[in-house]
Image 1: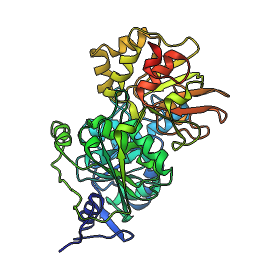
Image 2: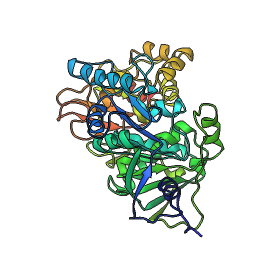
Image 3: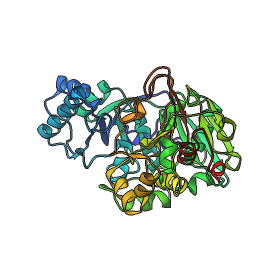
Length: 421
């Protein structure tokens, strides 16, 4: 009889063809998906070609040009062209061109490409997002991704798991972003280093898939190897209407062993921001109202989903942003952009004097569509606020949820919606 195991351990054991695994064990696993983007794919392609002329399975390779697209300059255009040419040569089915593409970690769940029980590696650190669907998904370097492209396999050291039991009803204006910022502030940016973070409790069970994906997305900001949420009826309803493949559910055994268990009272979480220059440098937003800002970015793979757009629009409706502030809205996928238009959200954004972009990672990594100049400060719904992350090394990024970001755009400083009344 197999030892009691966590979700993470069960998925890894199944893909290694083993009855059980233990933390620290080195295993080789069959993969379900290998992901890369316009920045990371060219290196992965070079590594793949050292091994083979053909990818292991053109229907299980995913390439998403989302970081510097639409191409901002000649170099970025060349990166995208290399990916495009490889996709055509190899007959890769999961590729979306500009005009159809979205930010990868919003796009893949939306399109039903990843399903519960999958083991996924991606040459992008926020690949951990798919843990919200009950996958073990993790970011790897482009070399490992290249080997994955060639062989459909990867090695892993089985991580220990940490359980976060979050119970209680979130207050109005508090979202998944605040939950994960609260956790990162509590344990630090290395508090879950090479651990599988498992999120559970009544707060999670009542949360939408959009909120859950925000939480899993930022597991890496706590050092996590993966960020998993077990499959339930909300997951099934989301997946079943869009899945490409059948799936397998894995649930942690009641007596599974965890490296640590944290109990969190969700009623005590309030709108939270992370001040420069670490996601763990958290404060209640209400304590930071004296911080003037130059720019607001609402979007990214963390908070560019339709619920995020709706939340921002609810604050911006009938208001205009402070004339000293630039507010950039970036829906995470073309489908979300279309929903924004159909629901009248785009009109609200434009009436508020916001700039609305086509889906792109863009300013999140200091790429384009909103880089910061010397000494500027931004509030962003993105996931990282490291030195120089969004532009000049002297600039600053404050991480926040979409409601706080929108209110801050109107106020000209860090603000809450109630400050605008």
